[in-house]
Length: 258
Image (cartoon, rainbow, N blue to C red; front, side):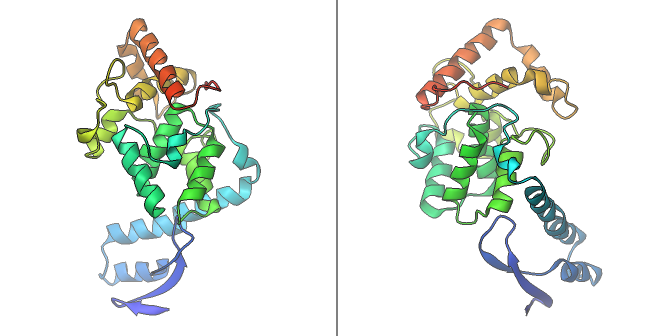
């Protein structure tokens, strides 16, 4: 134990990590807030993350393993694309996240959830394959925290034990939240045709394939209602283009539906 900035700290495992990092225990953070040394927003967020989310994930893992490893609520059976091991793809966001991951063994949480994880979710990759890739490539991956975050939060493979809805988004989200799209040959606003963004194509295809599960879900109904803005011809074109993406991703051997 040591004192940093007037707050006693202990060593504990990072929330996503096998590494051991220094940080104040929750009781010390609470005391820092009560004494005025830390704002309520910082103290509450830290304590909730350690005592709330971290312990919830840990409890879920130990309560539901080993069966949890085989969860596949969305019936996703596509193999992981080979380019996840090389970074060799024309999609700028994926190329950047994969290259960084393979070089450093690290990527930001949002890159994991909303770039690599999102692509796997939309493509329909088998959840266990996604889990095994995350466990293999990230230096901070420990199964008890990585597995629930990957299968539950990223891939919605547990059907809602960890999170109540899938984190599904199109290329427009990546364009709003990053600068990847400005240097990419794909247009995040296009779902079909030349230059259409694979994320956008696969997003609308995902909404179609899983409409029966989520169109009346209280947290996703509004999102799925947007399917009504597209006519039958456009939806069919999206399905055809999505299948071509699966072929070019080396993922045509198995269908994906849910």
